[in-house]
Image 1 (cartoon, rainbow, N blue to C red):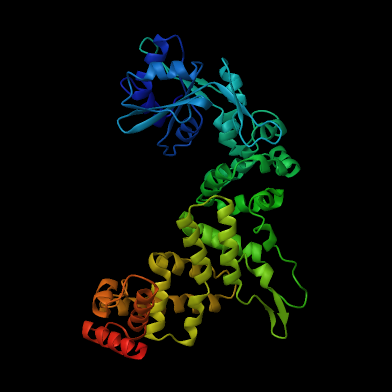
Image 2 (image 1 turned 45 degrees about the vertical axis):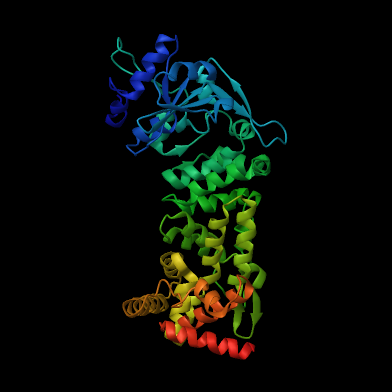
Length: 463
């Protein structure tokens, strides 16, 4: 029986049916495949519609060109044509298989005439199901499930259609994708698949950083991210692309007790909202601890681990080809995550302003990260830290009511400084603007007259 969510995609007059009619007229069947089928059977929303057919890429392009408003041809080499209609992309891919040869970072794509061969080369059985889309003279769609995907979907198991050593050997990224689906779906990995990852995780090294990053991003924002991260560590796969994570499994000293940093980190990631920047910051927030651990009379310490951690975060994110902005935002969250703990010593208005200025548009994420960083079993300590963050946020709100806190700009700008002092653009103007900004942070809002008086004093001291 076709579930209602799928039936809606296959009804007469839908894009799926219109495409199927075109392909049938050209002598080919068209199948809905992969995640579209899986998510419909799970009654999960999925905006993507993926199709497959025996037609070769050039023929697909010829068939869909009159129908589509535009075509997306970036994946044509790999057999995929994107047909854009009513603002939606419909991807149609030739039956194929992808295989990595030796140490190549790019897969070799071969096209096939057999649907079952195409499905056998997909990552997991729950993604290796297809539905043949009926045309006008047919009444019902046809489910194609040669590898037991429906049973695995019911059992919530992730299993490869063929021997996992062959499947992961053909495309090593599937090892990481295993944990991505654990995180997104909450399914249990097949024991043979886990053994295969443990045995051959080094093969992930031939996969490009961009593809690894894409899977990691999807993994991190899943609802079941904790078990996925534990799986990465326990199979050794994390060593291949994010070795800082397993390094957090510090040997516990029997004298100087401290909580397991790895378990703490994964718990923090689980507690945070599923926003990528925030989850990345939670993942990296303590990676500086192994390098800064010291034992002293008072126990174990990790002085300045946030400074070291921010530097390590930038290095790892750069290696994974994250954008410059994402890298800077995440490393700034790591760098600042210990700052609110000093609030227990009392903060002046200038300290609150400086905190808001340093956090910038990351303030909400930073406060959430600090709250989630509390994984202690000591409920009294947890309440005390949460109360401090509440008090800090109340102080920020009070200052917002009294002044334009978010801007923290002096009353005059660089152009006014240059006009008043007769200076050209350059480092000196930047130094003066920093002086004016520091006054704004330390003392709050002040007038233009006071700013110009500061410029007079600066000029007199310079003379």
